[in-house]
Amino acid sequence: MQITWWGHSTITIEENGTRLLTDPVLTSRIAHVRRRRGPAPTPEAAQCDAVLVSHMHADHLHLTSLPLVAPDAALVVPRGAARLIHAERGAAYSDRCIEVAPGNQVRIGNLDLTVVSAHHDGRRLPWSSYRAPAIGFRVEGAPSVWFAGDTDLYDDLAAEAGPVDLALVPVGGWGPSLGPGHLDPVGAAEAVRRVGARVAVPVHFGTFWPIGCDWLKPDLFLPPGEKFKAAMHEVDSAVKVELLAPGESTEVVRP
Image (tube, rainbow, N blue to C red):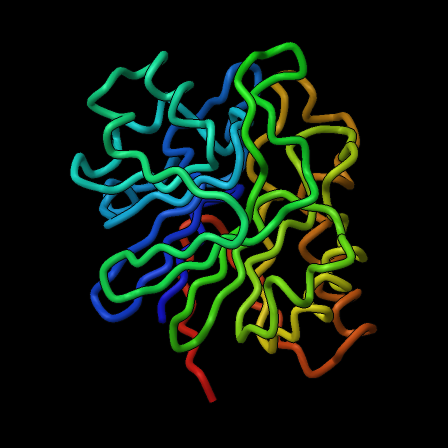
């Protein structure tokens, strides 16, 4: 299996001829937030069999990026998100949606997906009428993968998402405060321990930052990756941490 991290939560998971693309942000800006490290993903990133959307926040369901994705790719989205996509992008996009909720299973190409819970506010905005649960995905490949989306720790995490071989786990954010429903480096290490992963790739850090705020809380931009690696060593030194830069890939095999 090949994993390519394009920055933030945008990841290509490729195995047996099937390509999945998570939470695609394929541009250099999301409203007041700009890409501060690495170029925008190459056109290769847009080539996929399915997009996996974890929740409706604009840095995960990025409506501007959807037209850049392969036009025949399925859009696997939380139940309720298709209404927003229809309103903003029209039937050509909402008709491609497969709406899912925790516990659902979907087959994409040669890969089976199981939808798992995420402890996170899934609303588009606090005052929006668009509501859908935040979710994560377990990919039943060789190796198996947990893509967390955005989540905090929750009691049933191990039972729902684990055990897996690889964890794609968020360790930071895109601004000077992390807020509830997110994992910091220490919490992310505990999440990886709970799901029993032997390899972890930290994501959701070191990519986007508010315009004009480069000076503000720089310790929350790049350091979460290294802090996660150190925390993971303390929690379980047997876990291999693959610390990627945007655009870099790694191969993971089942032992």
